[in-house]
Length: 400
Image 1 (cartoon, rainbow, N blue to C red):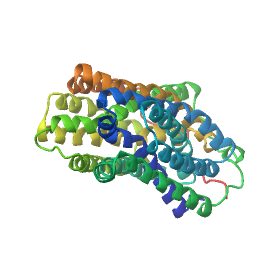
Image 2 (image 1 turned 60 degrees about the vertical axis):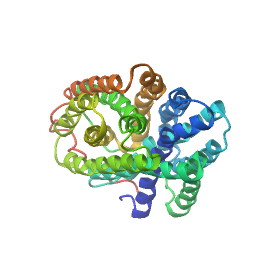
Image 3 (image 1 turned 90 degrees about the vertical axis):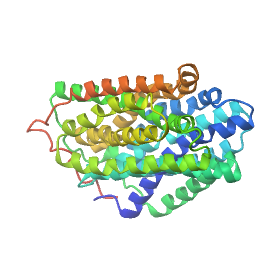
Image 4 (image 1 turned 90 degrees about the horizontal axis):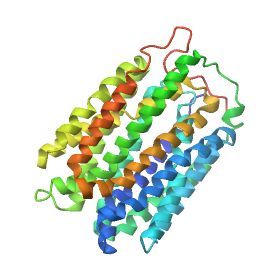
């Protein structure tokens, strides 16, 4: 039985909210810093705790999702995000802000290891399902850019956290009322065989982990840095923060559509041959952006974000293809703990790096990271052995 439409809609909305919350600070940091008499580069490291917990919290969240239940964990997710948003809006200094952001990271860590396995269970076209879910997640990033810009301009930065907090609490209520209860947690459902040679599985897991780390670094550097990059490089052309928010939202909205195309492709072709050209295109685009300014810079940002967002579905697709549904949340949690735990370093060093060396150096470093990801993906098997399950064919979920 596939996930019902109301459940799928709420799960997709959850992905949007998850990314929206994580990017509000990156858009509002300039306004917060101005109110507290700081520069944004010095305030940026205070959000590192949110991203550290976004990674570390994925491990227990994935375990609870499989052993306790995914529906219950999603209710906790929505409630926690709502409460965290209201707490952040009430902070009065950098350290209380850091504590509230870190708490938000704990609850934000629930979505990916729980919500994505929940939405693909029983899906006949899981690649496309992941693509649609990724589209919603990245639209959350786009909404963060535009909504935060307008709320900061009209009502102050605190409203930028309080309004999404209220939306998350509303979603918690709707999820509890609408989504059917699970008859049993995923770990107790009948096992569906996913058997691959041990050496091949080890190779896939190694590639999955390394690619997840490097792609998460790029994702965090870009989504947390693009707002300030456009502010710096478009200065004199566009200075209004709300207009800059709209321009950034446009980038994210257009780039998000790449995931629909990628989702269709990975339902039809081997992952490697779809994934490889997408990650290979990132490095030269970062190098082009490094010295650029004005509208050429904006066009290049749009181009590299198409490929950054286009790469997002692949690790989740690998988990669906190679891991049985009974333990997908735990495997997703383990890989997220490693990848997001390491990539949280990107958020911590973003401000100091830009302050010391500038965006040109940062973009050059990202080009090197993208080249490393390309080498990792090249190690994936071209095709699954004939005795293994067909690409991305998901087993029906137990009735709920």
